[in-house]
Image (cartoon, rainbow, N blue to C red; front, side, top):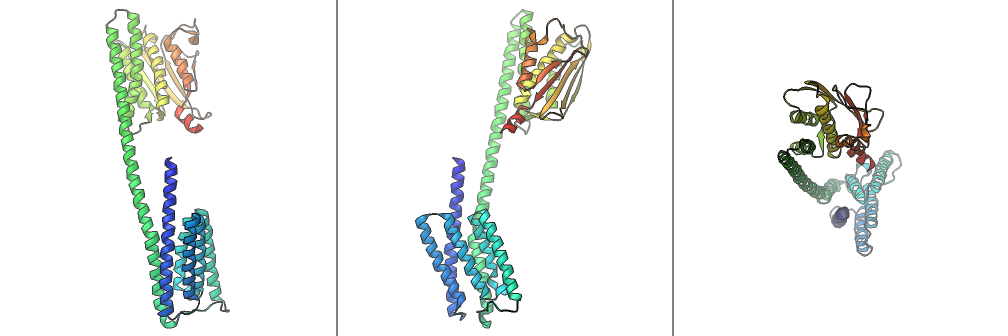
Amino acid sequence: MQNSTKKNSRLTDKTELLLKFNYTSSFLSIVFAVICLYFLQVKTIVPHAFFTYSILNLLNLAAFKRHDILILMAVITSLLALFSSLLIVLYSGGINSPFLFVFALIVLAGYVVNRLFGKIYLYAILSIICLIYLLGTSDFQFFTNEIPEESRKFFALLSTLFSIYLLYVIFGKNLLKTHRRLYNSKIEIEQQILEKETLFKEIHHRVKNNLQTVSSLLSMQGRNTTNEQIKKIIKSSQNRVISMAIIHEMLYTNDNLSEIAFKPYVEELTAFLIKSVVDSSHTIVLNIDILDIKLGIDTAIPLGLLINETITNSLKYGFEDSTEGLIEIKLRKEEDRTNSYMLTIADNGIGFSQDTPPKASKSLGLKLIYNLARQLHGSAIKDETKMGTCYNIRFKDIQQELDAVI
């Protein structure tokens, strides 16, 4: 609907421009013809060319009101202007005619029809001007200068005024009007974008606050029970909620409302998890080696939940018999795969028992790791050759996948 409105608006503007050109050029041509006949004493081709153009152009306008075919009216106007101007130039000095500048104006009129016609029209006029020059340099006189010697300066003045007036009234005013409209549209669009950005920031801010409220409710619920197993489940759920809240916080505090810098997010998330899960008697060293990339929210949230599960498992079970530990997080782009990344999360802890395959485990955390990897169009593979626990997680940026499809 909006595109149709814009198209109709452009069509209306083009119609108004062509009508204004036709009426103004016809009126000026009549005035020019009268001056040539009665003041410059030009009695042959030049004034008749002005009169003929005016009459035929007015008939063209009358026909347009009946058939309402804009392009037909525009083409006829362009051809009338071309042939009339050619006759006047040929019989008022050829390549030295002051009326030659009018060709530049009618080129603009040709482009008003459409781009292809304007381009053809331009090359035709350039060819005509070159031909006029060649004819003027030949020994044979193909045309004569009808303008009397004593009237040529005045004819040059009138031709200049004719061209400048047409240029200002028709194209100059139209360009200024278009410029003002574009400027106003630019201001309006910028204002709309600013309002939308403010709205999106407010949405992310409220989502983050709501998630923090959920986290607080879970915390309160955990304090109301004496069952340690339930407390652990609630704490795990609370950390999952916080991992999503951090993303929304980063989105509303940054200029980019659709993507977040992934490395700062992982640093903030892992620092929170260590503070939340590990007591002060343990020392956990983090080695984060991540590309400086930005990921869309559809990728960052499941990936953040996945990192939350793997890091939480390492902190809870990997270092039970040790007061020190190392967790490494690496992210690399796979050069041999389009839009594919490899995330490696490893620790030097004790690992977990291999009696039950990870995918068959009843642990919600392990199930989330594999399910979230599939959600990211990838896979999670546990590297059995490494000490401790090591996951190689291949994933794709969901937003880039969607953009590629579109």
